Length: 332
Ligand SMILES: Nc1ncnc2c1ncn2[C@@H]1O[C@H](COP(=O)(O)OP(=O)(O)OP(=O)(O)O)[C@@H](O)[C@H]1O
Ligand SMILES: [Mg+2]
Image 1 (cartoon, rainbow, N blue to C red):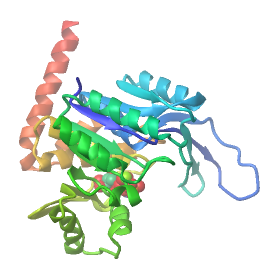
Image 2 (image 1 turned 45 degrees about the vertical axis):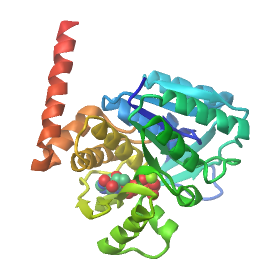
Image 3 (image 1 turned 90 degrees about the horizontal axis):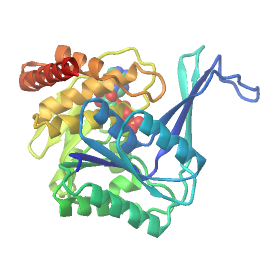
């Protein structure tokens, strides 16, 4: 029984490539495509797994693209359970323009999920999360799924006694009213959801605290892209700077952050330490092209070198885990 379970209602097969320059009409000769597993919860699970978390990913899967997706996840040794569905897993397409160093991202809708398939997803998820401490739903909902689906996930998490982390947007975010432990919107998603420019820290914290007072969630980690993140609770807000990195691809930065935060919390680190770990994972993910996410050694190195004295216990625990890994390696 895993400690962390992720749910991805709208998984994707991510295809990334590059062209010399992206222009209309002309055929664009692209480089060899890279195929990666995609969809919010799947990326969260990949990061949590890379960082040593005890995680299982649950998602609906079908069609030829579903087969490729599953084999890619299996190749990364991420434990997963699928719910077979009638349609094909969607494909997402990212093209780097090498001349301008810009990235174009095309996101297709997923296949429609029947009510029965949705119920099965919830059943498999709840069963898998029987003893989990954290459950994470991340990403959009595919066609046919009601925007209040994540409220059902929130209720299911409460039933099994797991803390619910949610990263979504639009109506799915708006229609989740109660029981979330930690919400991770980006500033773009918060603006879309509550309206207004929310330019100042007090406006941003105020909007998040209205959610908290209404019982939607306990904690909001508001990610601000290159400007870092704001961790907001009922009576506090703390700003965390980002770590400056050369950006190869911003795809999956938020998922890397969510996965690392869940791993930190599952190790009983403080919220402060877990958010710092999340920022280190997000920064490491920026340097990897496509949706290759991040490498454990880089995340831990960034965390150790970029964190403050309030992270000393988490740093100690990373060193202990590292020693244990070395001991196990030399024993075998
Ligand atoms: N250009 C950047 N430089 C440094 N860190 C970054 C940069 N972009 C993102 N990050 C890190 O990744 C985290 C998450 O990024 P962001 O706020 O863009 O969320 P996101 O979930 O990826 O966005 P969205 O869901 O809106 O596409 C940030 O809090 C920050 O720590
Ligand atoms: Mg995001």
